[in-house]
Length: 338
Ligand SMILES: Nc1c(NC[C@H](O)[C@H](O)[C@H](O)CO)[nH]c(=O)[nH]c1=O
Ligand SMILES: CC(=O)[C@@H](O)COP(=O)(O)O
View 1 (cartoon, rainbow, N blue to C red):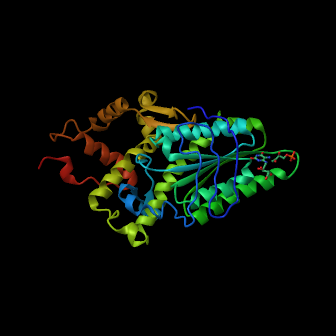
View 2 (tube, protein in one colour; view 1 turned 90 degrees about the vertical axis):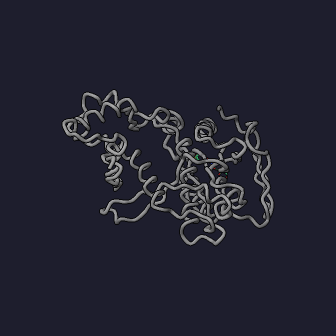
View 3 (cartoon, rainbow, N blue to C red; view 1 turned 120 degrees about the vertical axis):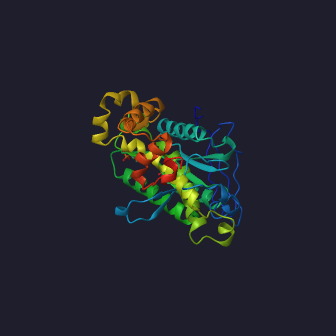
């Protein structure tokens, strides 16, 4: 979806209710956002929705201390609401960043009506808007988009630093993720390269962070010392959840395992058929294992067992290899019939 150019901006400074104009992209949420006088961060108010949070629990290796790690999942974006604050300064760049962000939201099934875009004059103005949106209680995360490009004076540093620290404090005070999608570049070339050019699209990356960030934060609230509202009926992991989560983690880790020198050497002849080396959208290193390649690899992995009588179960065998990277242990019963 192409981002429409910003039309107007208004950032009313009234304390209890403010309104922002949005970009004129029709499908997006209502044009005016009004803020309740007693705002409640969406993540804190998310008790009723906590049950749809399904964090990937990665069991860390012993070397990493054996702790559990909560991570957001990008597969469950249902009902998530995002505020996007975008600066009009260097609009040629920020429109591209916005476009990347909106396309990413769309790709991960975030509904258009759950996205509100607010336009502000420059990156310096982003934090106030981000904080207002964040404190409104209407959003799960705020995505901040801008492009600060160095000029002749030190003005650049002032704007860039204020934007960065302002977005940070907006997130801290609103207690929801406020994602820093503000480019700070030496020149326009650098900026355009990061707005859909050679270096990817930082707006798209920021949108991914917003989704994952939200979920991670909700996970923290709902599992560690959240209010009763959040923990009631919440997410207690049972063993099956953990095994499932580890299995999911194993699938991701497998792409990394594929990179180990030994592995690549062993499967050298398959490498190009088996692995994509570049992300299809972000033009950066991203290793994807193709399903047909998996089958070839498995043939090799299992060849040494062919002379044994026992029937090998494909999935447990595969998981038992790749799952080691995340401490996944496949129960013996899964490997055999008796
Ligand atoms: N030079 C850039 C600015 N400057 C404008 C400020 O952000 C601000 O709007 C002004 O100082 C009024 O308060 N903004 C950017 O986003 N990028 C720049 O490169
Ligand atoms: C970062 C800016 O605001 C930029 O326009 C300032 O340019 P200059 O340092 O040449 O005044």
